[in-house]
Image (cartoon, rainbow, N blue to C red; front, top):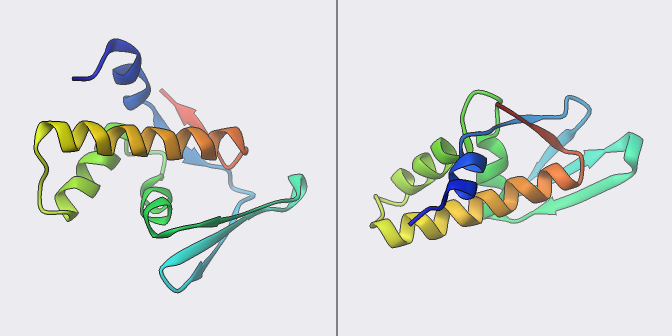
Length: 102
């Protein structure tokens, strides 16, 4: 079950930094932020999260959409997925790849 802190983060809308260049590479993706000399390689799961970060969807909605693609999840599995999405979004934010809007 989600706590208040998790729910607060889950309601944020990840908005990509317009300076980020995304380069698909098979199932993965490479993100570049030239002004900070950052290059990240995203695995398939992180790529799926990144591609849904559009400034319109909340972190919670991103997890819902990914869960639906997996055929629906029970509550425990969804909570785990939400935590994974929050972790990915948080890491993107820490690297300056996106901001979190309210």
